[in-house]
Length: 209
Image (cartoon, rainbow, N blue to C red):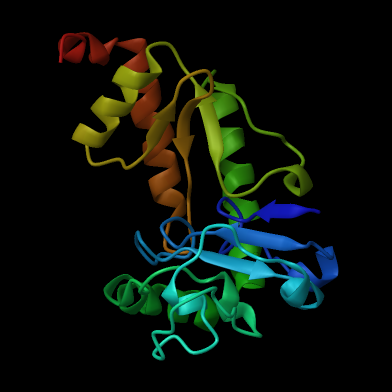
């Protein structure tokens, strides 16, 4: 069985689960799909539906969910058999606009811009003397560029204080993730702010927070 985790790719990298011939694919809407939390998804290859019986299940997986039958569950004959309890309708509703925007722009166009901007970001970072923990080959990277700087956690905190929205992962660095709405000027500003914070050790004022 092959499971594809699409959390870091769907919405910025074209993905076709049938071409990949995976058995399962899973992810969520909170990242590149711009859909917010609580709207995860699961793909199960169709020929596996009748061969697999969920261990953790709920009433929405029943063939007749509103029949409220007792006894062993009769699983639905379609993908609904992999559902659990009541769907999180508010989260699905709030995710809808993000999906619509991504579909309107098109993932191939988003990917084209992402490759151009991440390549530019890497070049700006290297020119500024920053260490880049991201593959230079665009075929081997998604939409994130990771910059490894001293005191990365504090640098990230200072960037957010300056309204530069990035995040940090220990052992990796500061994660910068331009999307379809990001401008080249924002990339330049981000690298400039990081360089200034590192060179002048601006994080020192926040080290005890």
